[in-house]
Length: 255
Image (cartoon, rainbow, N blue to C red):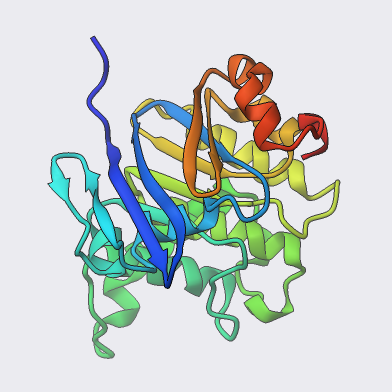
């Protein structure tokens, strides 16, 4: 029996003037599965992510998280319900420390406000939880470093840490290794692989590097001109004629 989808889009569409950027995309994503979303530049991958996470409103169709229609919910409301997203560019507080960035995420998740008189004692548990997340992503040694002083690779690791700290049901990664060196990228991929091992986690990954996709993906969804043109097991999808045509004859290993 197939697992109930944790996330689903139904005929999801967005138009910008006369241009249809995402065209009636229906797709279901399930726990314990990592789905790579691929396609040529301009295919609508990041726009599709933006529709799911609420950065832009849909022109038509709907987004469902479990049994709930979240199409009209704000970004914070979607996050509160278990939708977590890491961006192509880091989305951190640059003037705060590494530890403070993670602690604030945990504090927001638990709906714990600030009280200057009790902060030192009552937030000790938040700090310990943040320290545990930093240990998991191998950033403990940089806990008290200001984020703006971190190299790009460590900022990307910290963004994964903040996503883990949210404890979402659905993890969304938009080109997580963008701008990273060959030495830095494997650390991020190892963190995502660790998330994938959780059978309750649903992972969506937009990525151009096919070696990354081959390593991590259980399933590939292909978008082309905003439409879903293929969906299935990696080997089958990469070998399909429709995908080869969508990539305009390019070798998929080069995409």
